[in-house]
Length: 298
Image (tube, rainbow, N blue to C red; front, top):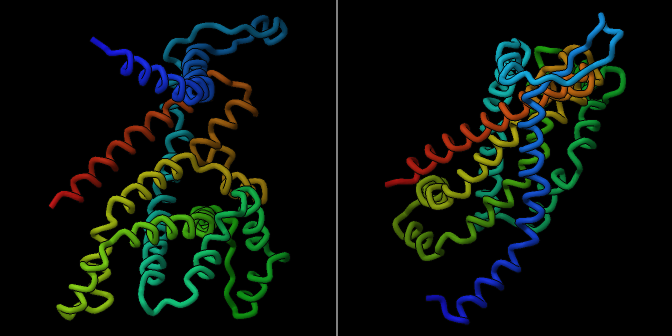
């Protein structure tokens, strides 16, 4: 039987959790429920297009349409190629920078932390606009410099769009993850590092054999969040699409959703596609979590 003190603690906990639960229900659960409901309907016209529109129950038709659409499926291949370029470069670069800052030879750590982190403080849309300016021939000093050396690259072409989008994301997020890894490195016991030095381990051996394994949970968490964010890829390719028509309006799954909703006025298809993206992200997150747990076991 619960005592008065236990009941008081439960009421206090419920009172403190109420604002979070209310906001969670309003901004997460309610939109999901509404999207699920919207995905079951489609809009049809009557009278050869002159009789107005009506919303009719479609069941699973919108999900079938999305999955059978090559544009939607190809978007996931684009995201896979993007992840293959972006995640190793960004995570690897952030880890190397964090290890360099953690060495005893590093000087002015605070300055370099701020300098490397600063790109993350720039909003994603602004960062994409800056880089698209640098990608645009006739405007970019980078393009002019490369062409003066006989190097001709079209960063806004369909062949280079994945690399261009990945480069923007690497510039934005490397500093953020570097700070996370550097903070994790500060928790590594100093006596362990001192023992490694006494045993004759050099800086590289210490980093690879001691530091990196001990911050593996932080690296796994960063990879998980990066995977989730990559599936939602939208801002960078959308800005590239507006600057060049080399890529289509449904180049990524999120661009497909926006095109279906706001260009084709097919909100049922857009809702179904968005829920499929969320389901794919959940499954992939579960897989990444399981793999990271297996990797952390001795």
